[in-house]
Image 1 (tube, rainbow, N blue to C red):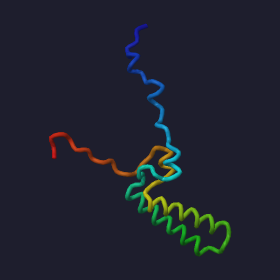
Image 2 (spheres, one colour; image 1 turned 135 degrees about the horizontal axis):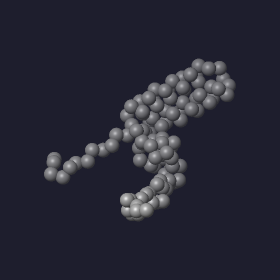
Image 3 (cartoon, rainbow, N blue to C red; image 1 turned 45 degrees about the vertical axis):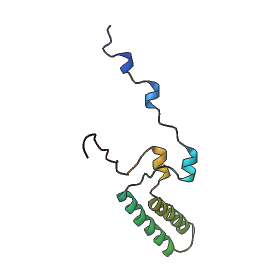
Image 4 (cartoon, rainbow, N blue to C red; image 1 turned 90 degrees about the horizontal axis):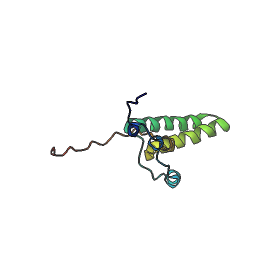
Length: 104
């Protein structure tokens, strides 16, 4: 039987591997910004709402959990960096437009 696909055109094992994660960047939050403007505004508003809800609830585990979650969510909006997005290789930041040669 004749194969119509060249062996070099077949996907290699290395083609599907994700780039290695830099743990130091993850822990110190020095990776590139990956939270876009709309996502950032949503995180700020909802994070502050969670902190507000925690403030008005009676003291207990639920209010502490909401407060911590709200602070973390607000922090990701302020810093424009999300560790979960980094781990997944996801970003909501707009792609920078590249200039074409000869067009200015």
